[in-house]
Structure formats: C-alpha cells, structure tokens
Image (tube, rainbow over all chains, first blue to last red; front, side):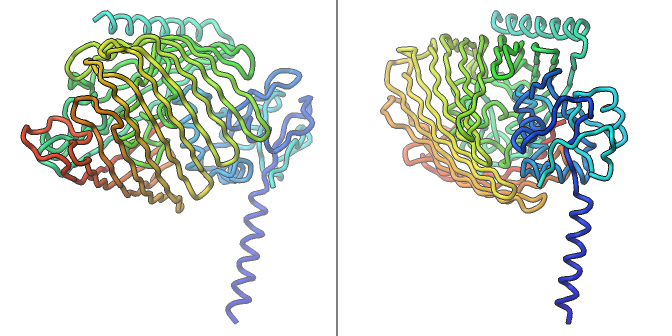
Length: 140
Length: 360
C-alpha cells in the first residue's frame, strides 16, 4: 500500500517543482523583439553573441546567484548546472572572451530596470510577468 | 632587464588607457575579477623534485616534503569594456624561475570589435595552444588539481606580445572560432638565461556543438637557444561536457632542435573523465609523454595515472584531492628536477595533492 502513496507524493512534488520552475524570457513591450529561439537565448545569456536588434544589442540580466529560478533557467536553456555556469564564466572572464550578464537582485528590480531600458532581456517566473513585458521565449 | 622594463611599460600603458577609457567612456564598464589556488603537494621521492613545469626551480620530494609553491597562485584581472573597445590586464603571482612569487603581467591587451563576429587584439595575449592553456591558471575551470604535466609542459609559450585576430562563424550547428596570432616573447628560465622567442605565429581553431568541443592548434616560433631556431607545435583536443559527464583528452606533438642541432621530437597525450554527482566530481586521468628522436640528451619521458575528487563546496570555490602514480620511462628521470647524481632511472613515485581554488 505504500507504493501508490509514494507515486502520489512524487506526482505532487513534480507538480510543485514544475509550477515554481515556470520561468519565461521577457523583453519590454517597447522592444522591437517579438520572439527568440532556444539557440539565440542560450547564446545571448552565455555571452556568445552580442545579439544586435534594431535599437542596439539586447542586454541580458541575471537574477541573484543562488536563486532557484536562475538555476532552473540555465538548466533548461543551456543544460548547465549552477556549478557548471560558474565554471563556464570563470573560463570566459579569465580568457577575455566575455563577461556574465549584469546581476539584478530581484524580480521587482528586473521590472524597474526594464521600464527604464527597453533593451533588457530577462527571465522571470511566469507569475511575475506583467503587461509592460512581452514573453519572447518559453524554455521547455 | 630590457624585457621586464618593456613589460612594465606595456602594462602601465594599458592601465593608463584603461583609466582614461573609463573616465571618457559613457556606459563603459570596469570589472575586477580575482582567482587563486592554495595547494599542498607531497611527492614521495627522495632522489629528485616533482614540479609543475620546468620553469619551477624546486618542487616537492627531495627539496621539501610538502610544497605550497608547486601548485599555488593568486591572480587578478582588470577588464574594461566600452562599445567596440575593451582592455584587459591580468596580474599573477606564482612560483617563478627565480624562486620568487613576484607578480607579473600575464596579459595586457586592448581589444577592438570590428563587428559582432570579429575581434582584434594588441598587446600581451594568452596563447590558445591547448583546450585549457588560456585558463590554465584558474583551477575552477577544470576538475583535476593541475593540468597534466606530461602534456602542458610541451606548451612552448603561455603568452606573446603582439597582435591577434579572432573570428567567430557558424557551420551548421557548430560554432566555430578561428584565431590567428603573431608576436614574440622573452622567457627567463631557471638557469637565469633569457630565452628569446621571435616569429611566434599560431592558428587556433575551436568548434563547439552541444556538449562537444573540438580544439586544434598549430604554432611555430624561432628560439635563440635552439639550432636551427625554428620549432613547430601541433595539438588536437576533444571535450565532452554534459550535465553529468565531463571527459576530455588532448594529443600534442612538438618538433624542434637542441642547441647542438640534434632533433627533438616529443609527443604527449592525456585523457580524463569525471562524473558530476551533485557537488562532488570523482575523476580519473591517464597521461604520457615520450620522445621520438635521439636528441643526444637524456629523454624526458614518463607516464602517470591519477584519481581524485573535486568538491564544489561553494559557488565560486572548490576543494580537490588527487593521488598520482608517476612512472618515468626506463632510461629517463621523466619530468623530475634536481635529481641526485647517481640515482637509478625509471623509478616510480606517488604524489598527493590537496588544493582549494576560487574565482570571483
């Protein structure tokens, strides 16, 4: 009789995890960018391309280190764990290949920055997306 | 003296430009990053020293039971970016050929982005000869305590003073980076002699797709203590890195001549595999170096096997432990330094290393 309960618990846990991990990639509604594909998102956040758009390059921003949404975003878009990301940026920075996205402490700070700068590209939990933002990519 | 004065003026020049650039550029950003490794290395041999490369005058073994010098270092990097321009200075303190830890400029260069795919640099530039040659000082970027000594000692130069061009392009799903470099460099070795490398030319190519990275390099240089002076360097490396497995290997061949005009052909290769199990990464490594020509000198040839564990105890720091079994080839002292005269050749020994790395 313990098995069904365990399955139930697993399903419930999976539901909780997928609900909290529901991050989407957004720009300001004032940005001309309508949508991005998985490769573009990965390349922009990993500093491989400067991603030019009509009014200048997109400026990716990161949530604070240790944030579950941040770890989830990189796991889904780049298939990399938090430690891999740290090691990746150590390699990029110290070989002069690039610098990591600007780190923005919280979801509300991202919203504020985006209202001032339409070139900001961010990922946020879907629940934090408001009508000043446009979803340009949904990680699977 | 001339070389170090030149280096200092080069560094000061870049620092001045960095400062001026920062003041002038609107929207420019200045970043300071630092890295370091604190290591304790214990080699179990009493007839010679185990060192990380042949630019270290002493090591662990005969000279010291436990050496902090062999694998420890501290570094800092100042980078400025503003629009299409950038500048970088990297300063490193590590165990040097003169036995000191005096800081030196490992890089000092200016970057100009011609467009989003093409960058030009001028100044002191790290050479991308191996998969990890440009991040060899940052332990956090690899899982072993040090890069395999049998292979990375074949690196002819770590950096050169000159120019490079770096182009990124796409071929199907593969991201390609092709870099061409030209420069020169003077290295002061453990005998305190100044070894001048001129006509340093290299082409380095990296192709990446998903978890795969393929790296190829060709380099040449003229060295004033070799006769004839022209030497060649070829390397190929393959790396696989998914969310759990990390595996890579490289093969290298160098051809040059001794001061007496005898050919010196060396080949080195290694392979390593690790498995990320949460914050723990157990790993294994095999590595070897052999000489393919009769240079008239004692050959430097050895094999080693290692196992170890990396623990990412914090986001920007790790702790690593590694056990190496080093077997110099018959008729060779391998990479050992300061060997006691009369020691039998080909004697195996063990090395135990504990390190902690950080990078911010």
